[in-house]
Image (tube, rainbow, N blue to C red; front, side, top):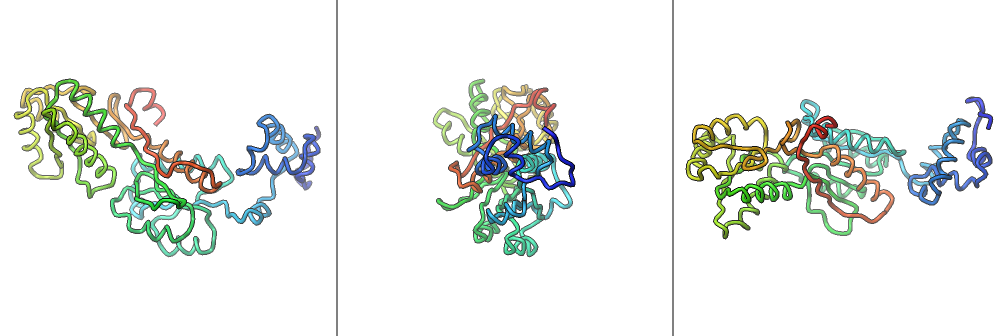
Length: 336
């Protein structure tokens, strides 16, 4: 096969002739929605011929035909202009990396503001992915009026049934259930969860709710527990009381590595030995050491885009997904 000069105009039919297929099949191969109509080996042959000939699909014509902009709005909280944690950066990376494997492009907005709504009114985006952590999601109701596919990443929302909307977040319920099951299996009957106020962010809220829900199922077995807020001025005194009342079988679930040292010090003062993955479980959102539970942040981003892509192509799928936490080891940490 002889490749043409880049200055020559290479058409779809040129690629079709080089491969011995129809022009329609070439179009299907380059279409997100229709590429499954082409056998993988044929699609591979078409792509190879297109690359050698220097063919590029007519993007403007395709956009007009499909009535799509091929832009996806990614809406981030305004505060992200000043502070962006590793957890949220990895979610963002997961979303953008996945989008970049397709013909779509990310269009980033900080806050649900006039610029965002003007862009929506101009039909310059085909869908909206919101990456947030706040408990106040009142603005989501306004987004639903945009009549575009909508996916929330890192938070959830009670969407009505039958609309193109969904959410992806970490599975706090599964994490808490597994940690508490392990603690109880090791003889713990007095449990404590150290977590910031639910108002701080929705992930904190979900973890606190999951802890309370699990406690209610174990109370008939003599298991008791308490939520400790490290922002409270007397939280260390309350922690000390938990150790002294519960004895060496006390189990602790802590959200945030920053609280490990004061908890360990309080335990030593009471003669209590804490062991990771036995009676001491630590959750971290950004960085972690071996033996600590971490969010699968990039996977949250990847699944958010996968859900959006299904909606854009009107394919069936779930309206929400919970992504399991990872127990960090050297292999996991090397890929974070």
